[in-house]
Length: 82
Length: 175
Image 1 (cartoon, rainbow over the protein chains, first blue to last red):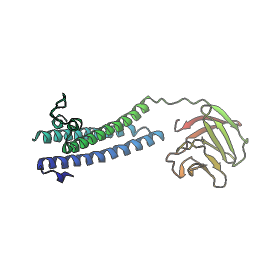
Image 2: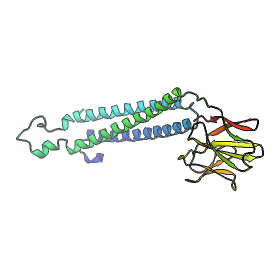
Image 3: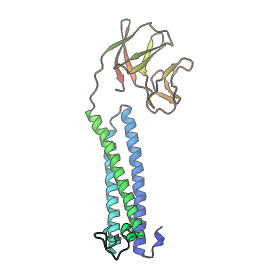
Image 4: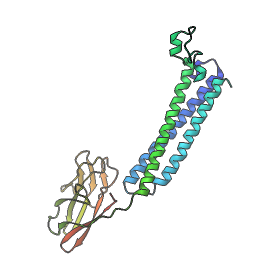
């Protein structure tokens, strides 16, 4: 996909964005697992895990937001030709 | 987006063909838009997951320990060894099942399977509590899962013997 463009700057941008999307998917899968495990534990009557799980989920969410900002920055740079 | 648009998107221009005005993002730019939109979607989904975890925390903070009323659910000797009695506890409509497992031993659980809420029953031949919907089996002694799709044990009704009466005084875990 990335090789279709003669512009190496654009190719690099697409490759970086693909890598970031891969990372986002990994982080999201971790969050989905975390949410389902926490919900199952909570419904079993153990609420102790809820707070640490929410903290970890928040960190993962922050990482996702940072990666998304990175994607936007690459996108802006490539399209402005920098 | 603005960089990919035809120069005439703001106002009609006779020099630009209609197709270019309608499809104002170039094909190469579209790949970027798609990836950026996918990244945005994944980030928003991540926010949703975080909100779900926060909701569990808030719910566990707001959740107060319920006060269970005592309720006479059976009389000693009312059911034979291996027999079963159904009753409603802690509220009307919340069906529970009591089993007399030995001469002096009574156990009671919520009758709702922890998988998909089917009504469980006691199998005397197998000496276990079974869910007919998806073959989930629970121990009759402590309500723990023996096999099948349920992942959580049956909520246990705490019983107290008061003379010749069996009194339900609570649920573990709380429901």
